[in-house]
Every structure is written in structure tokens, then in C-alpha cells.
Length: 264
Image (tube, rainbow, N blue to C red):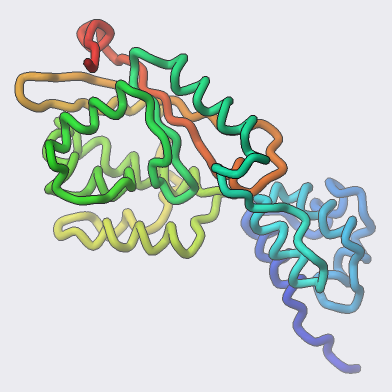
């Protein structure tokens, strides 16, 4: 009996099943498909329809970008667009983001893409980062992870950096779209974790470590001391890759003194 050829689609489905810790039987039940048919799809003995691929991707909660990869692996055209935020089709998303940022004032808030690059800020965030970084800023980076780990940037002004840094690294692992860091995020982690003196264990997600509900960040510089915790907002039920990968991080005062502070 001839062994079926390896199927790129089958490999991808198996990968996402393992990521979600689902057996073939569990996925078949969740997607309401035949376990036998799913087995044939993974082995390459059966070619699924476009609708079947999207059903399985939905059951596995695969991100939109990676759903396109599944479709391409099976020979189908992508289903989801990746639209630049400046295009007219994204006007409603832009208005929603601007409204979220403006309504969070007088406290800082930023919009980040999937790789932790800051794409928008409200006025308090812009003033806060300009104050902490200095004028002119030491680097041209707009990446939150690089700014936090660079000794020329925010790191010297984070009073509780030993507590914030490991929590931030674990957050990068945990909040990667789909729960799996993509190659760019992995490269970013490798870059910042190459800083001398950091534990090698930070390179992998620590699934045994408790996830603290709040890890405030304490900024201090020039007699100014503020403490914030943050909350993340995402676009609900997005049908565009760009929209799904955007995150709004809103900073809230963690103590009465910060409650009274105004970035002006």
C-alpha cells in the first residue's frame, strides 16, 4: 500500500490542532465534520472544499492571516484582505480607534500592530513618551518591546523593571495573534533577549508561571513618578487582517498620585 504524500494543508491543520491541544476527534466534533474525513484531509487522501477549510479554521480559532495560508496550501485564493489603515475602506476602523484614544484622555493610550509597533497615540501618551525619551529621542524606534529593553530608552526610567520585564516577555508570548509568535515576533524576542544578563528561560513561554492579573509599571524621571496598569482592546469580529491585528493599550492610574497627574 502506497503511503500518501505529505500534504502542506494537512501539516498546517495538524500544527494548529497541536497548538490548540485538540485531538482529531475533538476537532471533528467541534467542527461537526466526520472524524474519518478529517483524518483523510490531514493525510492528503482527501481534498477539502474551501468552506470545509474555513470551518476547520474557525473551530481552531486560527487567525485570519493564517487562515489565508491554509487556503493557499489547498490551492484556493485567500479569503481575507489585508488593507492599509489609511485606505478609505478602513475609515470606520480609523474613527473607532481615534474615538477610543480621545475618550481615554487625560490618560495615555496607544495603538499597536501585531509586532508591538506603535501606530497611533493620544496626546497624553505622546507627551509622556516624549518626556521619558528626551528630545531628540535616542533612537528612532517606535516598537514598545525595543523601547522597554533598550538601556538608552525607557528601561532606565522603569523603577520596577525587574518585575515588569519578565511579565512583558511572557505577555509577548501569550498575546501573539493566535497564541503563536510569528517569525517577526520571534526575531524581536531573540533581539531583546540577547541583552546581557537576561535569563535564558525567557526565550520560551512559561506555561507553569501564574498569570498575574495586574503588573503596574512605575515610571520615574526628573522628579516625576507615575504608576499605571493597562488594559487591551481589540476590534470585535474583524474581517480584515489589519483590523484583527491592531490592539489598543489604555493606561490607567495605579495610585492616587498618578490619578491627579496630567501630561501637558
